[in-house]
Image 1: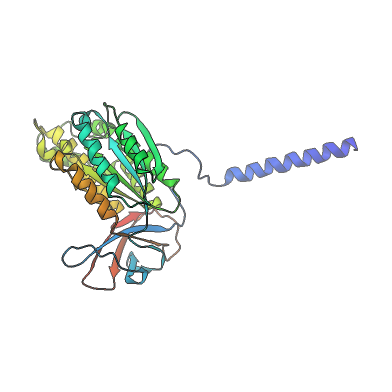
Image 2: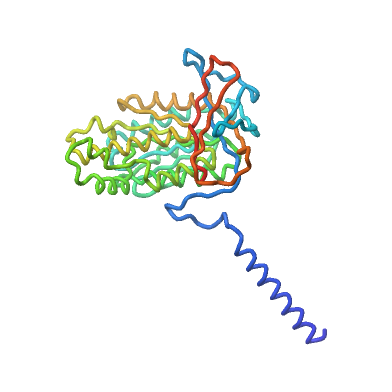
Length: 343
């Protein structure tokens, strides 16, 4: 081969490669690692809704079809692109709080979580994750209930509560499950350690319970809003089971700051459920845990999944968009999340 021709061809090849790399670097990357408080941003995406329908007596209605639903966003009717009936399987994360606040009833917690597995459909896929100061995957997604039950028995630990880190990890795991229906069922008192410290600083000057509660804005948390944004993008419903140890009305030695902290933590759990279309469950007594777990599993089997793309074809604009769902039979009532921030 002619030497000058060889070097000229090699030089052209290198230039082409460098140019391609430069162009690639200008494209948005979806694989870039997120910072903890980074807002998840997407372009035009399918909005997914989990919808429960009840009759005038509050009984679940599970026999509807796509044509029975009408979806409105900001008052504008939206075309339904995806519909899944109530018996469509779920991918579920069973998220267990194994921080110091659950040590005294750990065995009861495990037994109750086992009852949840028994109540699921045979094709539901379950992953088990525990959290305290660290978040740990105890088992990946599987339909093998024996594997999931064994993973529950492995749940141990104490110390801090990194709830929102655990929710973020759960969402990352669910993202790998493709287009399946998705949910997180989390048992916790809601008292995330880092948020608790921030709330304490916000309420430090409060003299009364009312002042302490007013000094903390539960919805202003960056970690909470990051979880909500990701859940919106993935169509994940979150179902908290709130332990009585986190109830602000049951504090053994209440003072304004502690009341403010506990009230904010409980409000965030409620917000997780409301914003994602999940269900908030307050455990009044520890012997109710198993019963509530079974009720959550039964409730999942009554949810329809509806997907639509915003009619205007707009990109995410950072604004709040209100959602309303109607069914053809006027005596029926549909329940879903109230809307989303298009971040």
